[in-house]
Length: 413
Ligand code: AMP
Ligand code: MG
Image (cartoon, rainbow, N blue to C red; front, side, top):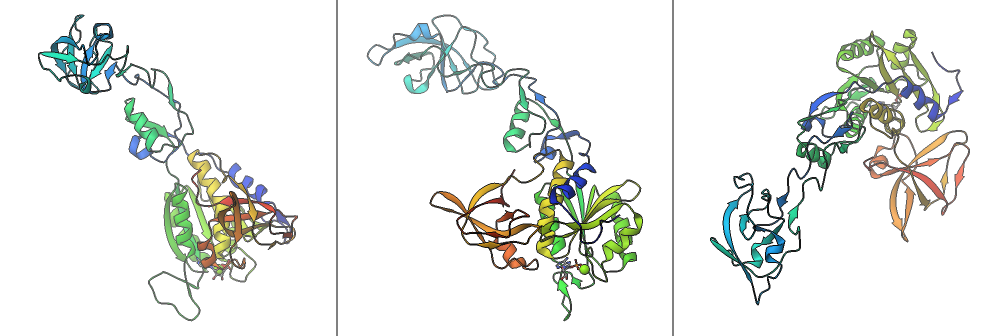
């Protein structure tokens, strides 16, 4: 399964090929802290109201506003204090007109009271209280249901559960929420020249940056990343390593070995299966790509090129959307923005260019500056950049001062 050499498919077509083959992972009930960072897979309705009962917003005295309406510093109102209510210690449920009850913040306001006089407006009396300022009706009382009513949808399906949503779910008494689990993404890097960071290098070997880059990117996208590490350019070794990983993966990502070289191991090993497409995508960097399924369970596998920048940009375009779909998160692709280009930029004919760049604000407008020459092996430049400039297939030159589309890389979405 491969496209004729030279024929390129569009970025969208390749992404669509991947997304069509991937279903969101089944959702299940997960304890709140496990669901942190995941998308809710249910509309959660509040089983209780918030506040759950009329309660005091201040430490002070619960009163009927009418009883103390005339209170001023010159002619304060005196009331007998008939009890005390602390938060979580409400034995006193009702009071008579013409009395006051000492009340603490969060404690239920007794029947018969409608307002709270804060300590600051009183002499803090114990048996009797002298009130020198009148509250308005309802002042310093947080009414039941003011915030959330029973049955209100507090979290919509698809909402990513951050600290505020997790806090709200707990506040309405939910110990768990239906959500999709984090996808398990296995990252395999191929290349007989690769060595593990920390080991020594030969004259012809390099450190395996890609598996770290991609595992970190997968984790940032919300996945659980398993970095398998280096596999040599031996098809048998690659297939063995892949086979060992199938049981623990929801998605496999490989790098290297998919172009036109003599030792393109991923292509060589997977092509005979007939379930993995290899071909060119009309983009730069990142032209050689592959996608398909492997194993009895038809596990999706995205095969990325080996050049580090190509691998990263391909991850952004194809793997990130796949992870988001598995998680039930939308949108699948990064939101773009418009920015003014600060330096002219050359781009290839017939391929969409993703140029590394840095964002800044110039004269109140978002501006973008290409970083260095755009070689796909320049990982130093990649680390310096925080955005990609997207130059359409048909454009070969963009003038400084023109507005271009950018993909900010560090924004949550
Ligand atoms: P390939 O696609 O396997 O031909 O690799 C293309 C280029 O990327 C070669 O220069 C490789 O040495 C380099 N490369 C491949 N895999 C990695 C990796 N995991 N880390 C860093 N560079 C790599
Ligand atoms: Mg290679």
